[in-house]
Length: 319
Image 1: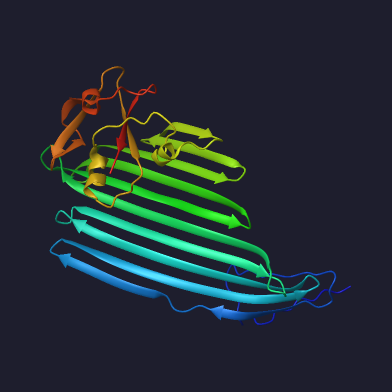
Image 2: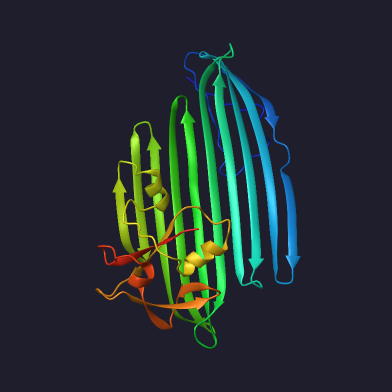
C-alpha cells in the first residue's frame, strides 16, 4: 500500500514554522479541497501628535480584518470552513510635567471566529474568541529629599483577558499583573528602593472557577493563595481575596491619581512593619505624600488602619 500526499492551491515557497494540515479519510480514495475566499486587505493606520516644548502626546491606531474560507469534500460530506479575524490596536505615549512624567498605553482587541457548515448550509461547529490585551507603563521622575538626588517611580500594568465560546460552552480567563516600584538615585548610584508585584489569575467556565493570587516584595514571595471558588466581583478586581485595607495615596498612588485614565482596578503595595512600630519615611511633593528616605512618619496614623496579621500594612491604590 502506498500513500501519496499532494498540496493544491498552496504557496510556492515554505515559511519557517509553517503548518501542513493533512485530511486523512479511510472511507474515501480521493479527498478534494479548495480555498475559495481569501480576503486580507491592508491594515488601516492613523497617527496623530500634539507637542509643545517637552510635553506632548503621540497616538497611533490600527485595524486589520481577515477572512478565509475553504471547503473539503470527503466521506463526511462537503464541509465549508470560514475563519474571520478582526484586530484593533491603539497605542499612545504622553509627556507631562516638562517631560518628567511619561505614560505609555497600549490596548489590543481581537475577535476570531471559526465555523464549519455542511453541504446544506447547516452549522456543524463554531468557535468564537474575544481577547483584550492592555498594557500600561508609567514613569515619573521627582526631586529627591536630599541635594543631587531624584526619585524614579515606575508602574507597569498588563493583562490577558479572553472569552472563548465553543458551541454552547464558554470560558473566561483573566490574568493581570501589576508592578509598582521606586528608587532614590544620586548621580548613577541607587541609594534605596522598593518594588512590589501582584498577579491575579482567574479562570471561569460552566464547570467551576479557579483563582490564584501571588504577591512578591523586593524579589521575595510574600503571598500565594488559590481557591476553586470565585470571589465576588469586588474582591476579584482587587486581586486579593480578602484583607484589603483602604488608605490614602502612596508614591505609586500619586501616579495613578495624576493619570486620569488610570486602570480602574485596585493596585496594592505592602510596607513592612517593624514589630508593632509602624514607622516609615515620607515626603510631600506637588501636594502628594510620597514614601521616600527622609523623615519618620507613623503609618498606622497615616493609613488609619491596623496592620494585617501577616505583619504588613496593605495600602490600596485607588484611582
